[in-house]
Length: 101
Image (cartoon, rainbow, N blue to C red; front, side, top):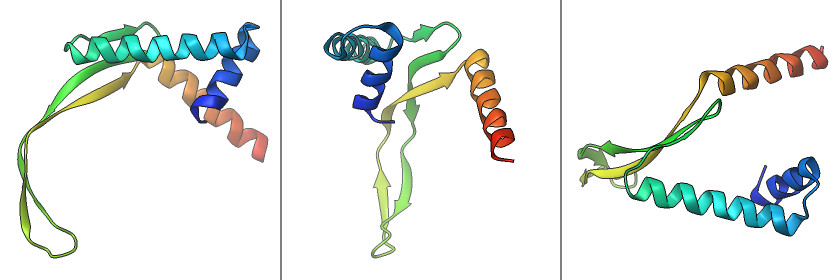
């Protein structure tokens, strides 16, 4: 599902216009981005949480030449799915398998 499909689905479920759904989605993404940039954790109860993580510096290999390269340490964004969200996704997967049989 891409962003436009998500906007269409939200608009259909809420009865909002597609423009309003797109604005709401953009505001949500901007708010989460701003919070994570400040090293805050964003918790969405029953869904999961967005936070920052750290990747240590390491040695890698250039796949074309095989030469060793130094990969610097970096900050990254993490999403940890909550138990209720994981449970809903697994239930949906098992229902899909039953329907295929």
